[in-house]
Amino acid sequence: MVGANEHLFRAGTTRLTLVREQRRRLIGCFVPPQNYGRAAERLEPRGSVVLLDGPPGLGRRAAATMLLEDAPTAVRPVEELPPTREEGSFEVSADDRYLLDLSSVTDGDYPSAERALIQYRSVVEQGDARMVVVLPAGLGWMLHEDLSSLVVTLGRPRGRAVFSRHLRAREVPFGADDLDTEELHHLFVSAPMRELARLAELVAEARDTKRYGTSFRTWRAEAVAAATNWSEEVARQLREHRGAHERALLVAAAMVSDAPAEAALRGAQLLLDVLGHESDDPVGLARADLGEQLTRLGIERGDDGRIVFRRLAYDSAVRRHFWTNFPDLRPAFRDWVARCNEMPELRAKSRMDLIARFAEQAMATGCPDHVCTLVEAWTRQQGGRFRAEAAAALELGLSHERFGSYFRSRVYDWATGRISPGLAPVLTDVCRQVIAATHPEQAAVRLRHLVLRQTGAERVAARTALLDLAHTNRRVFRRLADRIAGLPLAEGADELLLGLLDPASLRIVPPYKEFALGWRALLMARPAMEWTPVLHRWLDTLARGPLDRRVVGSLIVAAAGDYGALNRLYIAVCEWTVLALSDAPGTVPIPPAARQRVGELFCREIDVLLGMGSTHSAAGAQERGEGI
Image 1 (cartoon, rainbow, N blue to C red):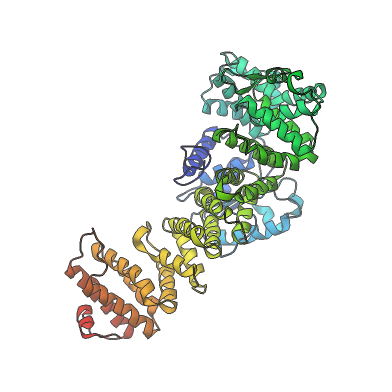
Image 2: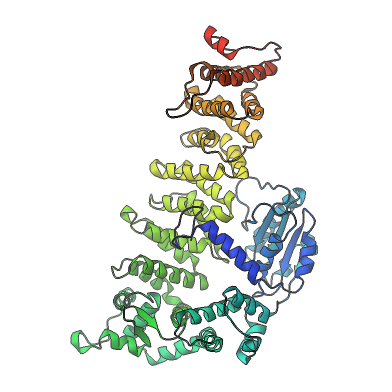
C-alpha cells in the first residue's frame, strides 16, 4: 500500500489506488453531521475558510474531507497542510482545496499551530482557494477572536445510518429489524464514528470467516461481543493465567496470529528473555506440549499448523490489553518486536502482519516514536536486510489519521540531518510513493534535502524521485526551480537543476518564469559544456513539434543583461543548427530546414533583445565563426 506505481506494503496495490479507494469508501459511507449544510454554504464562495468544531468522535475530519470534495469547481486533489509552516512560500491557485487537521494538537502546541492557521488563511483568501480546518476539541477558549466568525460547530450524525452505510459498503445483507437491539442502540448514540465503522468491518469479517453461522444475527452477535466484551474477557483470562510463560505465549500468539504455532512459542521465549524472566515452567518432556499450552489459552492450531483464536478479533483485544495495561513494558515490547522480526519461523507476510500490529498499538497508546526507533534500527542493518519492514512501518505511520503529520515531520528531520546510509533509500521510497500521493509539495521538500545531503546511489535515487515528481506537477516544478536557482550551484544542486530543465521526461508545460530563472542560474554559473546537451534536447523538441516561442523567449530572457551568457547561448544554438550533434542513434534525423527555422527564430529574438532590426542566419554566423 504505497507508491504512485510501486508497492511497499499491500502487494499489488498502488498508493494512489488506495487513496482513491479511501475517498470512494468515504463518499459511500458518509452521513452528514448536524450543521454540515451550514458549513457547505460557508465554503461555497472562493477564498472561503471554514473552521470545524465539535466533540471528538463525530467524524470531523471525514466531514472536512467531504466538504472539500463537494466544493464547487474542484479540479486538483485535496491537499493537506502541515500544522506548522515549513520552508518556502505557501502559494495557491484559484479553486485549490486544503485541509488543515489540528485535532491532535495539544494546548502547548496550539499557539504555533494557530499562527500557521492565520498565515494559511490569509494566502487562501487572497488566492481564491478554499480551506477547511479541524479544530482541536476542547480548546475553543484559546481561539483567536478574529477566527471565531469562521467556526461551525458540528453535531453527532445518526449512528444507525452510519452503521447501515458501512454495512452496505461491505455488501452485508441485513433487515431493518436486525439493527433493533439494546446493544446496538447504545452504540448508535454513544460510540465514535470510527468504532461504528469498525463494528461493520467485524460483521463482514464474521461473515467471511464462515465460522460464525450464516445469518446476519449470528455475525452481529459475534461482532458486538468482539467490540464490547473482549476487554473484560482478556482481563479475566490474565487473572487466571498469572505465569510469565503463559502470558508471554498469549501475547506472542496474538502478535503472530495466522503464523505457524512454532513462531508463537519462539516469540514467547524471546519476550521472556527481553524482560529478564526466568522460565517458571518444567523443562523438556515434563512440560505440557505446545498444543496443550495453546488450548489452555483458548488458541487453536489449524490443520496447516497456523494459530487461530477461537473468538472473532480476540487477538486484537489481547494486543490492546497488553499495550494499554502494561505501560511500563511498552519499550520492552518495542525491542521484542525488533527481535521477533528476525525469527526464521516468520515469512514475509507474517513479518508485515507483526509490524502492522505493533504500529497499531504504538500509535493507539500515543507512542509513535517507538515506530521511528525501529525504523532507525532496521535501516542500520547491513545489506538492507530489513529495509522493506522499515518502509512498511513508516508507511503505516504516514497513513495514520492522527499521527500522519508527526511522521511527515520526522521524515523532514531525517532528510535534513545526518542519517545512516540505509535510511536514505527508505526515505526516498516513502516520499515518492506515500507522501507524494497526498502531499506532493512536502514530498518534494524532503527529496530536495536528500539530494543535497546524500552522495552516491542515494543521491541519484532521490534526484530521480524528485524529478519524476517535478516533471508531472507544475507547482512542484515552480517551487523547486525557484529554490534551486537561489542556491550556489555546487555538486548536487547543478545536477538537479539540469535534470529539472531537461525536456526528456517532462510531462507538463513548464511555468516559464521559473523555467527562465533556472536557465539563468545555469548560464551564469556553469560551463557551456554542462548545459549544452540539455539545450540541444530542447531544440530537438522545438524542431520536431510546434515551435513554442515561449521556450525560446524564456531562454533569451535567461541570458538578458549578460553578453557573455547571451553569446554562449547563441553559439550553442548555432552548433545545433549546423552540426546536428543531437541526433541520437535510432532517432529520425531532424531535417535541415527545421533546424534552420528554430535557429532563425533564436536570432530574431536576440536581435529584438539587442535592439537590432536585421535578421541573421544562424547557419551563416556559425560558418563565419561569429559570436555576439
